[in-house]
Structure formats: C-alpha cells, structure tokens
Image 1: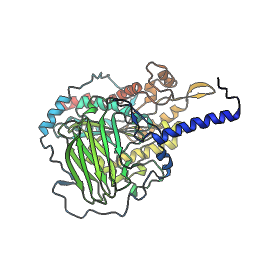
Image 2: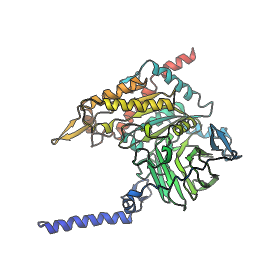
Image 3: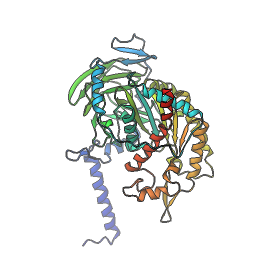
Image 4: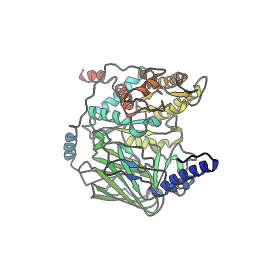
Amino acid sequence: MFKMNSPGKIFFYYITIFLLLGLLSVFIPKQGIRIGKTEFVFRWININEVLDYNNTVNTNIVKKDSVYKGSTPKDSVLVNNIIIKKDSSVNNLDTLNNHIKDDLKNKIKIIDNTGVESLEYTPKFPEILMGFYSKIDSSLNKNKVIRILHMGDSQLEGDRITCFLREMMQVKFGGSGVGLVPLFNPLHNYPTLWISNKGNWKEDLVYNYPRIIKDNKYGIAGNISTLSDSLGGSVTFKRSSMAQPKAKRFYNARLYSSDIQDSIWISVKINGDDLQAKSFGINNKLSIIEWNLPKSPKKLQLTFKTNISPLFYGLTLDSITGVAVDNISFRGQASPRMDKTNHTLFKEMSSLMNVGLIVLQYGTNVVPTVSDNYDYYRVDLINQIKILQKVVPEVPIIVVGVGDIAKTINGKVQSIQYINKIVKAQREAALSCNCAFLNLYKAMGGEGSAITWAKMKPKRVLSDYTHFSRGGGKIVAKWIYNSIMCKYKDYKKKEKN
C-alpha cells in the first residue's frame, strides 16, 4: 500500500493530479464530447479559453459607424425606421396555423388556485394588467406573438423556473417555442435548447466591465454575440429532450442585429435541408431577418459569411401567434442593469417584439451584503423600474422577491435572518412604482424554509441552500403564473358585460 508520509510524495501526488486535469483541458474540445447518442455532453475547461481570458472580447468589432442611406430593399419593409427582411418561403398562414393546432394536442394539466397568496399590488396595477390580458386574448386574431420577459439573476439559469412558466402561459393562451436565445452560449447552461457553434465566437454582456460596445448597444437581453474573424461561422439549435412540450416546437425565427459594417450572407438549414439564404447590406440601424418555417425543425442551422461581424442580439424561436416567454438571466447581478444599456435600442426591440409584461426576479446577490437597512438597494431598484417604465410604458411589471437562503455557520446550517429586510426593500420599491410584488420569502414559508426545501425528497432547493432545483422551480413558476393571472377572471367578466 502506497503511503504518502513525506512532503515530497504529497507534492508529487498533487502535481500528477494537476497535470492530468491539465491534459483534459488540452484534449477535450470547447464544445465537449457527447455521451453516446444521448443529449448529454461532457465538458471541461478548454486551455484556449484560459489563455485567452483577458481577450474574450474583440475591441475591433465596432468601427466607424456606417449609416444606411439607401432606399429600402424590395424584399424588406421599413418599420419605425427599422429594416425588416421579409421571407417568401412560407406565405400561407393557414398552413402554419394547422401546424399550431396539431401542436395544441401537447397540453399539460394546470390546476388554477383561487386567489394568490403573498401577492400585493396598488389599485393602479390591475388597470395596467388588463391591457396585457387584452393583448394576449387578441393575439390569435392579429397573428401576433405577445412576449413576457422573465428577467433575473442566477436563479433563472438553466431555464429551471422560466421553462414551466412558459409552458403554463402557452397552454393557456397558445404559442410555442423557447423565445429569445443567444447565438453563442459558452456556459452551455440552457438545457431547453441545445446550442452549438463552429467558428470563433465571442460574447459580451452588459454587466461585464469594461463595457466596450459602442453606445452601450447590448439589446433587450444584455447579451452580444460576435464572430471574431472573417472566416465566418455557424450556430446550430437542436431540440432538447429536456424541454417542455410546447417549447420543442417553433414555426418562426427572427434574427436581431445592428452595426452591419460589411455585407453578410446567411444560409439556413432545417433538419439538414436548405432553406432560403438571405443577405444584409451595410446598415447601422437595428435589423431583423425573419424566416417562417414550413415545419417545426428538430435542428436549425445558421451559417454566416462576413468580413466584419455585426452585433447579434439573438434569435427568437416562436410560433406565429400566442405567448412567448424569454429567459434573461444575469448571473451575479442585483438588477436588470437598465442604467447601463441603450434605452433607444431597448425600446425599439421591445416594440418590435411586442413585449406585454415583465417579471423581475432579483435579490440573491444582495444577500452577501450585510446591512442594518437596505435603503440603498430600494433606491437602486426603484431607479431600474422607473427606467423600464419609461422605456416600455403601459407594460405591467411583477417584482418577485428573494426567497429564503441559508448558509453554514460554525458547522451548522442556519437561515439568514436579515433576508426579511431585503424583502422589505423590494416590496417598497415595487409598490411605490405601482408594480405587483410577489413575496417569495413568505410563500416558501419564511425563515428556515430553504433548509426545509433542501431536505425534501425530491429536493426543492439545491445543496447550496440558495438555488431552486427544477422541482422547486416548477412551484415558483406556478406562483408567478398565478400572479400574472390574478385578475384574469375579472377581465373576462368585464369583457362579457
């Protein structure tokens, strides 16, 4: 038996382990290694990412602005000074509606609770919420998709709450698809849709510092994807077995970009078959290319050829009517960072994407800051909400408070007692701005509930006593759904009279 009873042997042991882990970084590709024929991929830190850590953003992406001065192309339409490429591959909306009707067979049973516990709002909030109900009720007749932005911190990562909220809303009001997704997801933390890339892709986030994107043009999701060289690249979106039934199917794809400083050619394949290729000329404005898909693909691939990468804001994968719910998670952040993004661009994208409601779910990253009061956070949250209300007026906002969190103190797991002060600051901020406030801390059971949820089988909170499991996420999603639907019966009664 080998005994490590000398410093030299111990040192040799750790060096050996270090070298073995280093070899994994060299030989395992960035995209990982798929395990058999499953959707599961084994990934490891890639050595190139480590060596290139300080150069993860190309500072030459944005050069001198090129303003679009020509006439609108024949296959495009100018909406609110924004160029939208039209698609002629599928023009028959009846055909698409037939696909959607078939998809409606994939329903889940939703049990509506009477009343919503732990939800508070001012008298003005229901008036704003009625406008949202009107939009989603009429979306089918107007062939529109109404969007809900679910914005939050790492609690939203992995789509573990949003995926269930999305399914509930789409079963109730129609619609399908995963909503807005980035072209590049280096963390591979979005199991609802498998995203893989070829080529040298990079991302820049609104909450990273320094922010190098000119004029803070980070878009509605605060996420920029770019190609860092002229060799081009591709992105493949593949249906995931982990997705909810409605999310697996989409019939419309919209690509959002700006700062197109060189012509760009985009070819598209669905399930390996070529779809109509499209191109963009030089254009400084927000631009959209849209494809109506003849069928819901299991795999969609976009290939790009350009000398200078534009700023890609993401791709929406939706139905042509109903509701879309977008997952926008900001790891490590306490707010949506509206003060750091371009308000004009945010407004333009919100208008074109038909944003009808916003759910804000932050607070986890405020917990490490111990304070007698959290007035500073209340003021900051109010400022963030005010900016949102100015940029997207008449859009109802629901603020979801932070849930219970525990940590190990002197070897014993204890609930963090001052969370109720953070909840108080969130509540005051929400109600002072005429938003609804969902008291997640109270709904979970208050102090100590994180420990209780972590001990449940199956677990509702992970072993870090902070983040929800998928099972816990489903429960939280139901509370958010009930919050959104809190006045829907009143709205229907009013419509009948």
